[in-house]
Every structure is written in structure tokens, then in C-alpha cells.
Image (tube, rainbow, N blue to C red):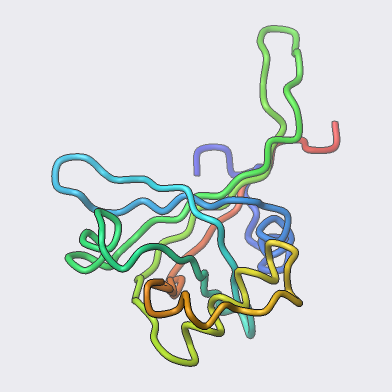
Length: 155
């Protein structure tokens, strides 16, 4: 990271950022150009380990690309506001970048993933529609590495 003073390495601080993010973007391999898709998400975190969950259709570009190459990059951010400085305008933000391996889940793990997504989106008590499960792919990204970054969010 070019400006190490902005780096966040504390796992709990990174989780605090994740808790406040609405959307993550999944970077997926697609030949010459990456394919980046924004998704709603949920997550599990324990003992320094992190996994993200997201869902989508069982067929389509995202599903096809993930089946070919499960290695992904995840980006998430919070823009607090823009600030006029002496020489420019800058964004006050917090962000994360993670790398991991994505797998499609099934059965109880898929239900768990949907529950984590609902919980993160503020609908933890919402019942999962069992009739939608056969048409829904639930993915889990097991995070291999993650970093956070912050620029003066409170100034």
C-alpha cells in the first residue's frame, strides 16, 4: 500500500467497516478484462477467519465465470463525504480489498448463507422462501487475505 499510514490491519476494525458497507463488488476473471459485479452480501467472521456470502441466478455470466475460475477479488467501501482541501477535493472513506476462493454452496450451507445475507441487510427475522431455493445459487468466498484503508473519516 503506497500510503501505509492509511492502512488498517486490525481485524476488528476491518469487520467494523464491513458491517457498515451496503454492497461489495466481486472481481471475477473474464479473459482479457475483469468482470466486476456489485452484490448484496452477508458474512461470517470468527477467529480471524472471514467468509462472504452472496447470491444470484444458477445460470448466467457470473455463474459461468465463477465455475471456470473461482479466484476472486472483493472490494467494498464507504464514502463519508467529499472535502475541499488547499489544493484539491478528496474523499473521506473507508474501504476493504479481499482475495479469496469462491464456491457455490448447497443444502444447509446455502440456507446459512442466505440467512447471513438477510441479517446483514437488516432482515434477520425474515423467513427464507423455500420455493426460491431451487433457482438460487448461493456463493461463499473464503477470504485468503484482506486489507483495509481509511482516509480521515472523522475530519
